[in-house]
Image (cartoon, rainbow, N blue to C red; front, side):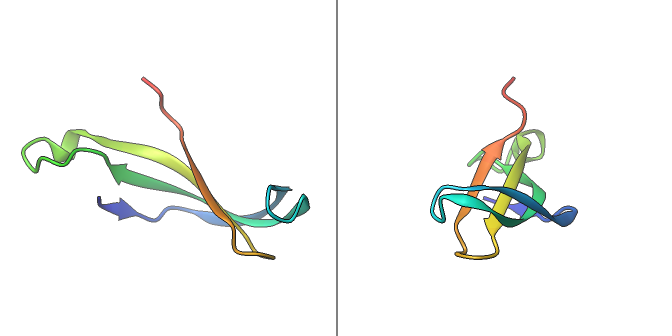
Length: 66
């Protein structure tokens, strides 16, 4: 699965691990979802990725659910 990093910034958001609002590094990554190399260029989808700067908890959410 190939990824490319996008813009990153800090935002206060709720953290499930810390159970409080903490500073998170938020970025957008393009993730290639296809396992086949033939159509991999057409299967990239944007994901919102965030990491808690306090505990390191990492999660991602697909931005396009077409």
